[in-house]
Structure formats: structure tokens, C-alpha cells
Image 1: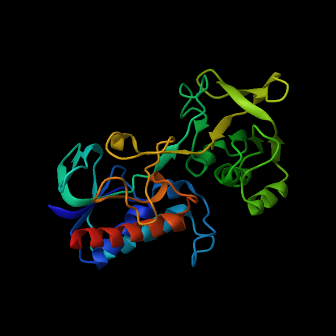
Image 2: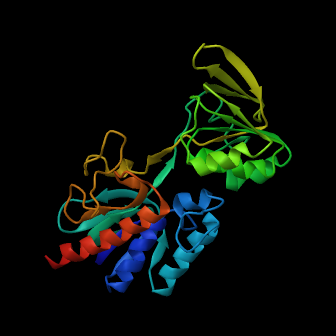
Length: 302
């Protein structure tokens, strides 16, 4: 039996792994994907993580994992299918194996929200994408749209503008929510065009994205916007479905936890994008991981 099971190996999970190794706690990290990093992998450029100005998300993730590996962290690739979080012994059932521990740190992160419009699911991978850094190169010299108005949408648009002939930013309001610095960078790009007060009601195409069907939010008028691809960046949803009914979640599905990471169940802690918090950043996720390990130490010593 382990001292700690960490679910997820993004910044929160790897930070927890590093601190757990330094505390000499018997720990295992379970990651469902073949590579660590979580949402950070989808970020082309990270310019707000101290000491690493302009680093790519992939490179920063690689360094996080390398640091954990150097300290001897054990990371296994497996997918969690069930958890039993009550009682003194916590059980995590995966596709390949079942693990037990005295504490669990939930760092399972979040996934991209979808538009839930006709054509989105049908054309996923055929012009519909949620990751500009993953798929942008397929649209070199072509016309694309980015749907959203937050930091992720603006970062995607800046990245795509380097290779695409034209990038539309489709936003349902008349002003952006993203950081002012990102907005200033966008304003300086000649191949960016804003489509204000517009919501996407359908994605059209025969086997490949051909256009967006947009509705003007003020007048209700609909129009067609011809594009070769669409990048959807309308926020994230927590990976918390497995914990429903066992932990207290908020109305959006985030795990209720304070800055110590303590959830509503003793011995279970939450870190990173999966928990309730005011600011979801790489830095705050890494901080969460460290705080959770400090909390597990106190719990194990009680």
C-alpha cells in the first residue's frame, strides 16, 4: 500500500510528485495519456512562469517530468475507471491494475468545453480542433476561425496567425476577456479579423469543415462564414465525473477544496484545474501540488 496515489501528471500532479519524493513518501502517479503535461501541452508559448520566459508548453512539461523522474518518482500509464475514497484505505481501480493508499491527490485536470452545435462532433478531426498547437500546421496558408474570447482563444489566434492566411476571432460579445497584453499583440496582426456579437450555431461541411453558421446576438440574423477549419476555445470543464457522489463538487463540477487542497473527505486532496479556485494557471497548479503534499504529511502524522 502506498502513502499517496496521485491521479494526473500535469503541473499539479508532477509538483506533488516532486514534493512527495523529497518527503520520502511512498508515492505513485497515474497518468492516462502517454505524455505528461495536461493542458500545458496545448500552449504554444508560456511567458508567465518565472524563470522560463517564452518557453513552449511542451518543453516546460518535459522539464517538469524530467525533474520528477530525477528524484525517482514512479509514473505509470493507466486509466482510472473507479475510485473508492471513503475509509482509511483509498482504492483506485484502473484498466490494468488496482492501487491502494492512505491518501489520494486528485490532479486529474480538465478538458476542453465543446460548443454542442450541429456538425461539431461529426467534423471533429476534419477541420474541428481544440488545440491550435497540435493541428495548426495542417492549415498553413488557409483561412480559419477561433471561437472564444479568453486567454486560450487569443493565444490560439496569435499562434495561427503565423501560418494561416486569415484568422477570424468569433466572439459572442463586443469585447474580449483575455489579457490586455494578448489583445495588444492581436491588434498588431494584419491577418486577424474580429467577428463581434456572434455565436456559432452550426459547423458546416461535407466530410471537411467548409463554413460556420453564425447568429448575430443582437439582431438574431444568421450568416455563413467560409473557413477551412475552426479552433474552439470556450473554456474548460473539470475531469471530476469519477468523484461525483463521493466528494463535494460545486455547480460546475469542480472539487470543493481550500488552499491546503483538503476536500470534503479526509485523506483526499485536490490540486490544479480540477478544484475550485480563483486563478487557474501553471504556477498556481504547481503551488497546489506542493500544498497537497504538505497536507498529506500532516494527515499521515495525525
